[in-house]
Length: 138
Image (cartoon, rainbow, N blue to C red):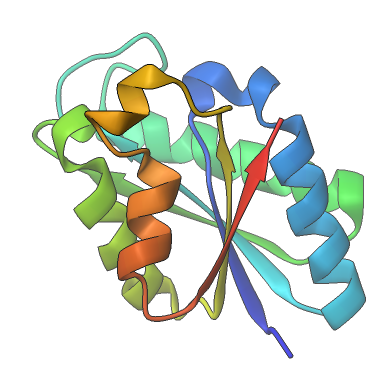
């Protein structure tokens, strides 16, 4: 049913993505799908990496570790944005096309009052993506 699952990750908070990473890995195993881990960075230094190239290397290492841990084919796709916090949704939607993903599995938080003013990234991607999106809380 699915052949390429895209999982957006925030390398600065990868410790909070466990549930979504596990769900994505389980679906990959069930369908024999590859997983593409996507992350977005700025061109300027961040807490994760000094350059986009260093960021891409760290994302690739993360993807390889997840693939080995869960036993699925893993790829990485690093993207650079001038303002990742403002451009995250359109950048992730662009990544869906660039990676040829047919399913997106992404983590989300439990909704709160701010979500009535600013939509969540998962909600926006689910609304606008041309493929199925599974938003995983927890």
